[in-house]
Length: 239
Image (tube, rainbow, N blue to C red):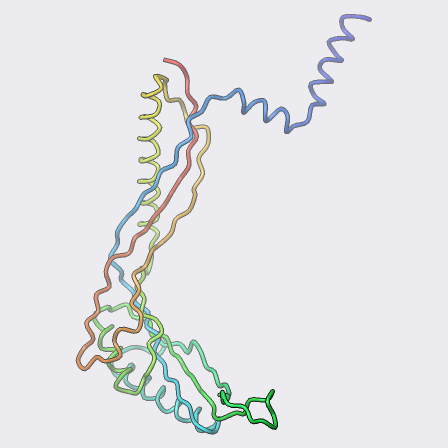
């Protein structure tokens, strides 16, 4: 068998090895430091969202719906009277459902009877002027709103905060990698790869705390937390 033939056969054998096996072997030969880093940025909200609504129950469906519609119409008039444009007000839920009796007659033990109907209507008000949050809540309550499903705060554009949180996460990861390299007495090399583990905005919420407001409801938006995390693999070498 010729030497040339052996060389060709060896090359073909190498080329025929599964790609996964070659990749695993390559990774096994690499010496890396894997670190994760987290970053957090605090931000003051500049947008609020309030959901106001009314629920009513009467013996007939039409009566329940009329009662709710009347309250919601007053809510809309009160909110718009504060200078809130119609484009910032959205209907988020309308429902009408029967209310069943818990008591069942002996003649029909498996069929609960309908004793009334419950109607619900909810609107969402979005505000860019946070100084009006308390006034909107009060206007809704004075109009007859008996549910405040949600009061939340947000940012109109959180791009800058997300980017800053990512930068802080990378710096944290770099610092950790350097500390590990020094402890191992090795040299921190170039970045092999990096992955973003996620960026999230943690918003302050206030739930149903303003139903008894007699004057402008006191509302403090608090601070948003924008959090990011990354994972970085650094190549290492001996000093």
